[in-house]
Amino acid sequence: MTERLYYTDAYITTFTARVVERLNADGRPAVVLDRSAFYPTSGGQPHDTGRLDGAVVGEVLVREADGAVIHVLDGEIGGPEVSGAIDWARRFDHMQHHTGQHILTRAFIETANAHTLSFHLGSEDVTIDLNRTDLRPAEIDAAEDLANALVTRDLPVRAWFPSEAEIAALALRKTPEVAGALRVVRIGDFDATACGGTHVARTGEIGLIKVQRTEKYKDMTRVEFRCGGRALRDYREKNGLLLGLAGALTTGYREIGAALDKLQAENRQLRADLKAARQIVLEAEADRLWAAAPEHGRARIVTQAWAAAERDAGELRQLASRLTARPGSVALLGIAGEKSQVILARSAELPGPDMVALLGDVLGDLSAEAGARRGGGRPDFAQGGGASASPERLAAALERAAAAVRAALESA
Ligand SMILES: [Zn+2]
Image (cartoon, rainbow, N blue to C red):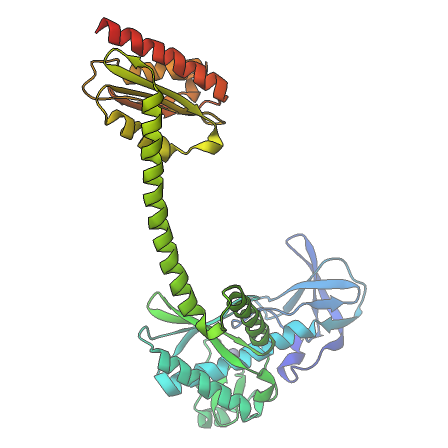
């Protein structure tokens, strides 16, 4: 079994050891050493990374069967003597968060009678899940305040294997499911629990403990938090964001909420104004198209094709409706482009033609491909499109439709 150097000293970053076993971990070389400072993934804390001689240690895990620590490498190493070095920045971040977690967990018990059911320490998110779903913001603040007060007291943190008699006197918060010698982590007189992880020597090393947010998760509350350097980076990032927002809104950062409310109200008003103005413009345009349209007996036929940039489908529909609201009106309208759109409509009192059938002819003019032709509607209103068409080709197709309408009106 591997002697775990971090059990007695979490601050060991370099060590020498002997290779006692070589194996293959899913195609990558791996070794077991007689002793190691590398922490293997366990107890919610991720593994260390670093180097063994010339090879990068990318993963460290425990072999269930015998508790050996397996170091997965990116290449073969010599031996039997090897030198190891762990990535200290990563390890210290884990130590800050793991001790920070013990403190926050105990703080939630003290202030909110909320017990931690699980702990996750990831490269992005760090969370604990609490067995209450009705935590009030004041309770969360109280736990956070207590946790940071414990940091300020700079209490000693001790990790050791106590005797049976000592364990009985410790009133442990949590005892492990696994058998074997019990390792305990005690934070001053505040908290003692069974734990195999790596911890800072004094609580002052943790730095700030900051709850970022909470959310209901199953029948628990998930508390996301950050400690030390991660908390600082998070503060820096959010401070920068907030100051940038305040600058963009030309206000102080405390006034961002009010400025945003004002902006949203203005935006709603502008949208309403724009909608009203569009209606007026479309009505005027319908008038102009109607006045310019050639008369054919008791009907006027408006034929018009636009380029894609000039018109959208909603406006096309509105124009068609406004035109055909007038008696004796036929509207043959289209938008050219990658996906052309066509609306063929007539006032309901006109006898014909069937606009759905006519739409089929127009779309057939635009594309020989049956798959590119989609559309349908009622006898007095049909809409479709899909095929790519130039403004000229679309205009020609609509002119042919106009001729068909004239013929239909004459024979009616
Ligand atoms: Zn722990």
